[in-house]
Image 1 (cartoon, rainbow, N blue to C red):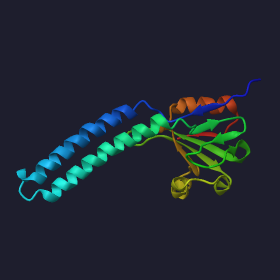
Image 2 (image 1 turned 45 degrees about the vertical axis):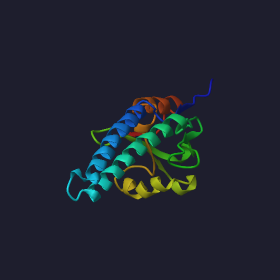
Image 3 (image 1 turned 180 degrees about the vertical axis):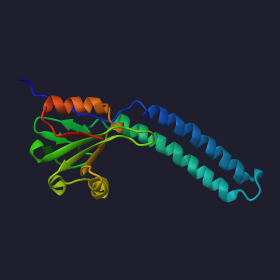
Length: 176
């Protein structure tokens, strides 16, 4: 029997749109800021500086995000017979024996969906700072400690669920 391994990376589909939105909005704000600065608005120096800075920030973020997702082709979520590897959440692979539950939270308007792993000892897997910041709160509401947002990945929640079930049909899945 062939080993089943499913890997998910950053999705690149929306990055070009964000790049161009950042360029267009950023350029517009920079131009408006310069218009304020150079006297077309009375006492507009500070507002102009703020708008120009905000515009430059929008343009920079769009460029940075596009570059990040198009050049970083590292695996962000791997589902293997040994366990689940999610470098965005923890440094080490979490073996199936230590996974108490896999919570799949679907996307809602204005809230991206995510995959959370409930594990016996999250510190054992060297969680990232961002993951640990939300771990206690997430655990309080019945979630897991190691969190991966699937909205940034190149697979849907259904594809992640199918990969988990293909690898471990007895996986402790919880849908929310």
